[in-house]
Image (cartoon, rainbow, N blue to C red; front, side, top):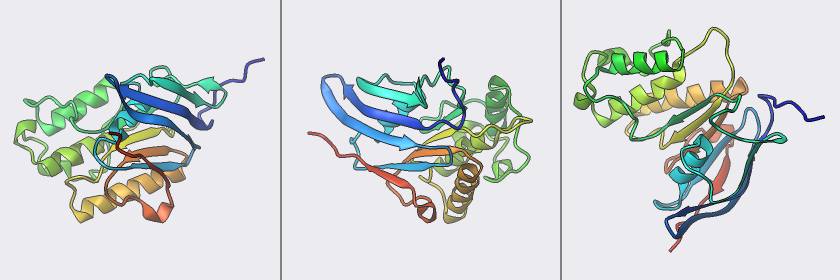
Length: 211
């Protein structure tokens, strides 16, 4: 009898390798991420941090290795685990306002707009995307994590340089959100050059740039 997949099963990357063209950029990376876990991908530019995030998100295929959720192969497209990928370029419509972009994403994912304006989107809600600063764009992107359903299902957050362009106040808001997320059973994989949630003792995966 095949075991049913559970939202609480451990996510396991086993000997994942990634090629870009003929160049090997990630070689046989393995790690485990349980429910309530946080993992940071660190390393210099070109080490494959973003590529590894995109493999987990289902945007890129792994060249070798496996991704599993419990005893099952992990397919991000069909997984029971809700997934959010937040990374530049954010895929917003440049001619729509900040509020319209967020509303459109909520509608596409059958979610409701957040009650709390933690990232102060109201400050620029009616401005077209093309007029926003890099910090405002980052805050808008992270606000997607606050979109909600009537019932909460802890998901997987894939965050590419999430504290880039944020001031110290909004960095603290981000860390508080991540802490609440993992304490409720959610998971986070973040690629970052900067310190993030050190008080949560995240697992560190160090990637090396390959020549």
